[in-house]
Length: 386
Ligand code: NZQ
Ligand code: ZN
Image (cartoon, rainbow, N blue to C red; front, side, top):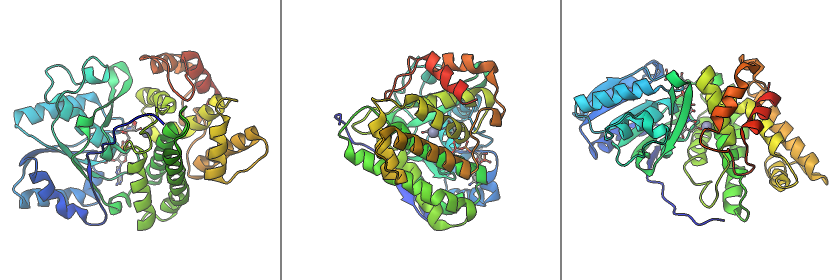
């Protein structure tokens, strides 16, 4: 295990009706805020009206910015920064899924930066100061509600890039499982895959002696495998929604990564797909993950797959590679069983731009720590996934 500093500065308000604390939480930071949301799902479920009522009751002045799209665009970030500056807003309330939350973080960072906010994502600038943000999450997936990451798309260059900073952790996040009841099946399933993928990215890491992190990871994977199908069959099952929601936050708040490096190749490869093809993040992860697993499985990495097989899927075999392959097959079957596609062609992606995506994926250097991948490796995985 590597050395680490443990710090997760987000206050989580978890459970039904926790929105009642919204007014008092915001007033700790500001009374003029930006209210940020997506394409309208929060209006359909009545959450928008509840938020407006609370803001008015608490005399919190606000400007609104709606229309944040999945695979959120840097253009909306620029508009948000302009609004915050023009109206002297000093807090951002993000209501929605990861795309809304990530946009809020980009605005928060860009507010104090004189250049263009996209510079952060190009690694030309680092976040020195940020507006405080709070979130009300409506989709269990990204963990953005409890981490300092933000992933933004630039349509002009067909790029999707990420930043991370301790300054971008939300001050508070309200996690009411009821808000996730309205998720369509594809988003529920893609969210479960995203959560599982975050766990895989940290579980499949080269460090040894990380039993705490690894056993926690296996437990969270089992929660997803148990409750994902229930949430799909019974969208209003509170227990299922609550467990998936909390698993999502714990999967990417740092807890599983402290003392480890993680891998993140699959995420970087997926971001190339959703940068060009506007694919749902979890859908891309579902089809790439088993191919990545097959590609990195070797004499050097097999022990981790043996743990995964035994502790997550209950697979035991005298032959390590048999166990590993069975676990990968089980993973693929599980994703299929919750309605996820298994190949690039199923989502309308052919071989036309695989090389472009492979080269872009390594723009900041080789991917991965569990096994390092160069552009040729990435291309091979994309080809295998066709
Ligand atoms: O826009 P609205 O109308 O709200 O609809 C959204 C959107 O169409 C809908 N939705 C959200 N909550 C709903 C709902 N529909 C009905 N009922 C609800 N309760 O779901 C659609 C997808 O929303 P989005 O926010 O895009 O999904 P998600 O939370 O999966 O976020 C995905 C984005 O986060 C990035 C991804 O790359 C992608 O851009 N990621 C962010 C990470 C982070 N910040 O740590 C890490 C992840 O690995 C990931 O890369
Ligand atoms: Zn993800």
